[in-house]
Length: 326
Image (cartoon, rainbow, N blue to C red):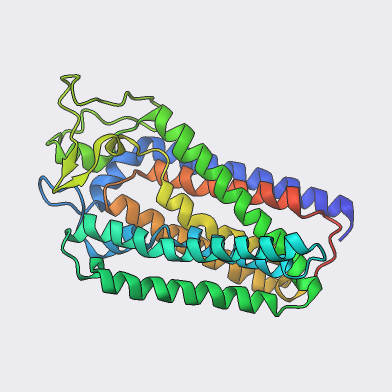
């Protein structure tokens, strides 16, 4: 494909993306509350759902981010092992290995944290020996990733190093945008927060573009609650927009850069498969967050889209158009 055709296809793709996203966001603006009323599974006065679908993805919905981070550090490990500089070869590989293991092991504590919220503090998975066993499994998986990538040929390892940079860039940037900036600025009340407080008319509902104010314990508004069943909530009840879980789940969009790096995946069949996998996983997490009452349609739409855009930006920065695939 010549440069002119490539540029034209890129422009068409961008325009199509903007039209679809804008259409969905405009739709979400008007149907947010109706979609939640239709999908949310909460008993009266309940904050954390026990619906199997919603609770399951609440527990595992963030794991794609940590799996991809673990793989990214394992790829970095495999490249530092090949370095000529001794300091980089030994210290760099040790640091990358530890980071890969830490990301994989963190999944255990993240999943258990959400299991305790949805199924109570006395879950069997919170027992010390069971947590240790799962942590050992996490360590083993991370070490297997490091071993696998270290066995690849130099060209493939270098190509995948660009993949690891895209993953790190996308995860870090999207988390800064969502969890540090937007959530704390917009302070949108979660559906389940209004439900828990008995606001069944949803008089405190805010559209995605309407900035709210974070309530405090002593402001007399009655909108603040510190705990639910012994689990700390506080300000988290007012961090609905955008969805952090959907953003983390959407880390699978990093798979879309593989065809740019490896010849094996540069086929129509593989591109379609990687896109399908990315959309399905992100979609499942997104729907589950609405079912939980944790987020609205617009929250999950924007959360997933921010990760997608960060992946595309990272791909543009780290993978040049003339890159020779491995």
